[in-house]
Structure formats: structure tokens, C-alpha cells
Length: 429
Image (cartoon, rainbow, N blue to C red; front, side, top):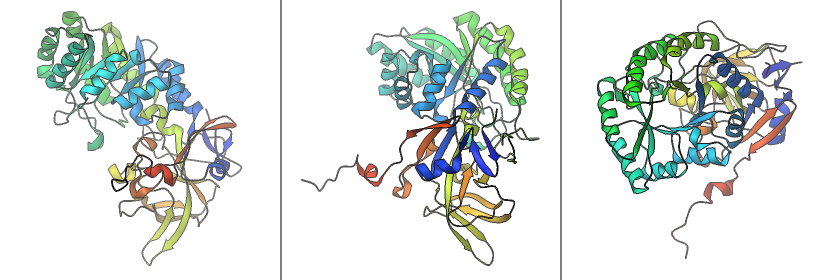
């Protein structure tokens, strides 16, 4: 499946010339490949065929309605972390009954909203949250479906900001307290015990951490199934993707697996399926980045080239407000020209935001480009637009979805009036 590749020296998404999109919709511009999203979902679903499973897309990775609608129509469930994400699912035609509501800080308003809309399950992160959900459900004369999130204390060997499965992380309940929490829940009248959940972190590029966590928690799930009748075991998400790949001439997918970079779907499935088949429970998994990360690029135009005795700066129109991953946790993104060139230089690729942390790449071998040239920042489909902001009063970029030779504008670019439309001037009479 070919989604991002060079054809006669021009960078394409599916059958669409990306330079034409940049000219039509301006930059910065997020571009997503529908084929890639569907291909990743279908390949993962097929690899897990031996299991009774449900893939619940982690909405926080990319919450555009068009992407949610694609996955809803494909039969996906959803992993949400806010009332706003649930609203998006409903608006996109998704089924709240196929949603799991995660997060350590659910408000009572969000809990009530989810209950009104027949949420599939709440992931319980603490005893106090358990009591709060029971209280809200009682006030509405409803029963709240719950799954306790267990913290398996497994080190996923990922960045500290996206590690969630160790005992010092804020997420989940320790193994030593899980059964007591289920006992507490079983004694509350407005809760329904539905499952058990875990999630050890994000951008995990080898199968061993998943296998270790499952080995640790499967006996617990089996015991809770027999004692409390829970029906599903959610193993979370976290499947890593390739950020540093190769983009060559001809029809070659740029994210082809590189040595020591990311495991294949087959390796992932081979590690988890045998460990879960004998459990006789429905298995939920919550991929986000895996489904959309390599399906998106962020197009940018070079504004200036600045050279000092010690450094070359390529100044582009993408800022840290558009893509914060490099500044936030040193996230790596391949940067390639839309018009193929063999000339390379070592430079910093930086944005226009008034912060020294506003960069896409530091001291990187990049294409030898000049003002006006176009670049693509690869692997930007996950945690790109969804983490974007209006810092420096910069309007948010537009988003485009590509399907073969066709494309659709799925979010218009903000204008200056949009920046202030919700503000109230206290001095006005």
C-alpha cells in the first residue's frame, strides 16, 4: 500500500501531488491518507483474528470528525478521555456504547454526560473516583459500567512523559489493591462490573513489554472473571511507529520498517495472541498513534534561510504551536522536500514562535532548500493537530483528507477573527 512516495521527483500522498495541496490550501497544512488509516486498522484487526476483540481507537491521537467517521464506519470502538471527545464521537456517528472512558480526572459533569449517552465503560483510576461515579449514577438512577485500571508496574522503556505503567505514574491502581477495589465496587448499588483495564505507555517498539504486562495481569483477570463476572480485559494501546524511515524515488512507502525501530503487526500479534486465547474474555485494545501517526504529514513553506559562522537555520512557517512534539519531548520527525533533491546540508529547522524551544529539528542533515520551497514533516498524523494551540496568537492550520486522486478539506484554516470570537471585552458597555 503506497501512501507517501516520490513520483518523478514530486512527493505524493496516495495519487495526489502534495505541492498542489499546499498551493490550494496554503501552509501550514495537515494532510492525512485515508487509505493508510484503513490499511492499519484492517491489518491489525486481521492479525488478532483468533481473539474475540474490539479495537477502540484512542481519540486523543487525532480527533478530527472525518477520521472518527472513517473508523466508526469500519466498526471501531473508541477510547476517550474527556466529555468533549465523547461529543465528537457522537457527532461523527460513533456509538457511545463502544466507548471506554479513561483518564484520572473525570468531572461529575463528564460522568453524567457519559451516563446519559450510554457509555460502554468507565476506566476507574482511584477509589475516590469509584465513589464519585457511583454517586453520580445514583443521582440519575442509572447503573455505571466500570473497569478498574490496574497498574502492572512494568517499565515500557519509553519516554518518561508517555510512560504510564510504572508504580510511580499517576495512572491506575496497584496490583496489591485491585481485588479490594472490586470488592468495594461490588458493594455499591449503582455500579456494574464489566472489565479490567491496563495501559503501560506509548510508542513501544518491541513486543516484550506487552508480553510481560499480559503475563502479569492475565491471572488477575481470570480470577476477577471467576469471582465478579467481568466480561472483558482491555490491554491498552502503545504500539510504536517508525518516525525515522527512508523516502526513496519510486513507489516505495516511506515508513518501511527499519532495523531496531518498530515491531511489525505480526510480531505484536505473535506476542499477545497466544497469551490471551485461553482467557475466554473479550479483549479490548486502544491504539491511537499506530492507526494515524504515519497517515499524516504537516506541510510547511520555507520563509527564510539564515546563516551564521556556526550554524545554518531553515526558518519555516510551522511553529511549536502547530506541532509541539519536538519541543515537548524531543519527538523526532523526518523532514523531506516536496520536490526531490539530492543536495543536503546540516541545519536547524526552526519556526516563527518567539521561543528558543520552537524547532522541528536541531543539527540535522536536511535538504538544501531556500525561501519559498516546500517541506513535509512526516509522521504528523498523531499528536500533531490534536495538541496544537493558538500560542503567539497564531491561527490553527487547515486539515485535508486524501482519498486516491481526490481530497477533502476537513477543517478550514482559522483566521484572525476566529482568535477572538469567544472573548468578552469587559470594558464594552
